[in-house]
Image 1: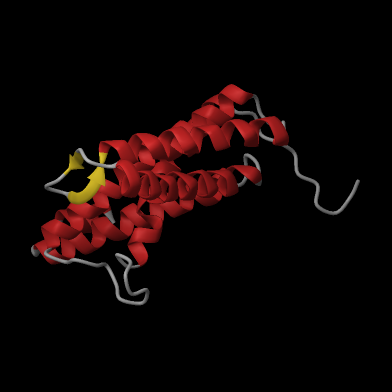
Image 2: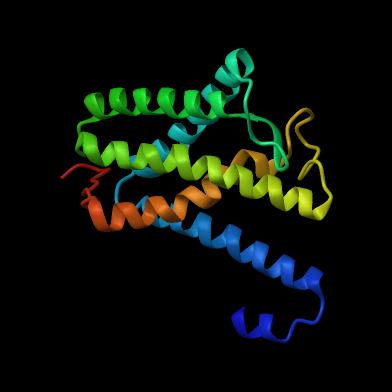
Amino acid sequence: LLIFLLFVKSKKSFYLLTGLGYISLSLGLLVQLRFQSLLLPLALILFIWINDTMAYISGSFIGKTPFAPHISPKKTWEGTIGGIICSLLFVLLWAVFTRTYTIAQWIGIGCIASIVGTIGDLVESKLKRMAGVKDSGNMMPGHGGALDRFDSLLLAAPIAFLFALFFMQCLEVNLFGK
């Protein structure tokens, strides 16, 4: 892929190949994260979902200060901070009830989901603006398309993978007894 990119003449082909690489690398590392523990990909997706939902809700109620108006005009500082706080409160509950990793390790994954996930959302919004596209698809009316369901995950998965690789032990999973 890298060698092919050297010889690409058109910008569209370059963007297509780098986009495919970005998506496949992120999702591949999410699958690899599953080999650390079955809980990690599930938790990462859940923490991102909680962050996005609570950022939307808190931003709708108390949001006044624009976060990145030139990229995503409806995002507010209040919504972003509210999403992070609510997400980390949920992470604390998760850590207390799962007890598979330490609270600090779960908070690390929660911070990655909240902070890096928000950055991933902004990156995808910026890419859509650069391409002159409002939505990345029209399967779900009212939503930004399929990429809006995964934009946070695409940036958070590689960071979470590296965090788990260096700071979390692998858990043995035995699905069929013994």
